[in-house]
Length: 323
Image 1 (cartoon, rainbow, N blue to C red):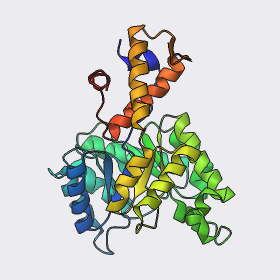
Image 2 (image 1 turned 60 degrees about the horizontal axis):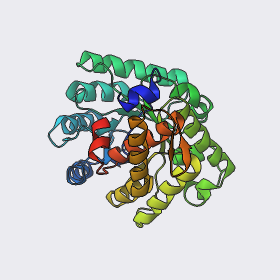
Image 3 (image 1 turned 30 degrees about the horizontal axis):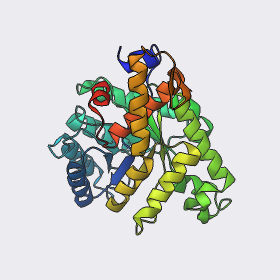
């Protein structure tokens, strides 16, 4: 039997996405990002940005450009999404309508920022799905940016929404929403991993995502002069907070984030060997290097392989056939 049939049975498999979510707003940077994705492969997603990318008075034209790019041959892997304006903006429905009309079939997801509640998130999903369906797409994944007190208070309900695929932490708006009660140092490292209120927010978002099989995505590293700063942040986000994805805002951050959030070659080899032995034993418990493994650990190693594939690892022929 296929591993996913045995290991998950009636359970829904958790979502799996590339480790890096790269944001670009201007036409020049959007095209450059798509070109880099073509060069490196689908090891990172590209999010084309309506919210911060469109100049005042140019919102409709910018959304049309994003739709054209997402629908074009430049989106050769189908791993291009878009961030629209927030639900309270007069441009939210316009963004969604234009982008779905032009690129519903090719779009990987839509990112909705600044949701205030689970009810608001559900309304955004309802409108997005209606627009997608009208343009021939049955299900369009939705990502949410958790950056308000209200969204954090209802983060588990937001993660539970069937359309939600990933939740991202918006650290800068979250810190700003405390009006000076959290210092600016908490927007960057090491403060962002130490301030109790920020730590609490990160943990609640990550825990909600894992409870409902969604992908927790970590906030940006604003220091883009040193690529390793992003890599270090990604490594801490993964090892201490359980994040499996992270934003980038500069091309030189992408490889550092992907490397930090990828399993090691040793982990991948171990996962391949354990799952191969398990399959040969019809998924009964096995001993590997004098350690007992059963279906609980098999599910862990299955996710290692899925992460490896998403991040561009060359897997064995047998493991490739599973995925």
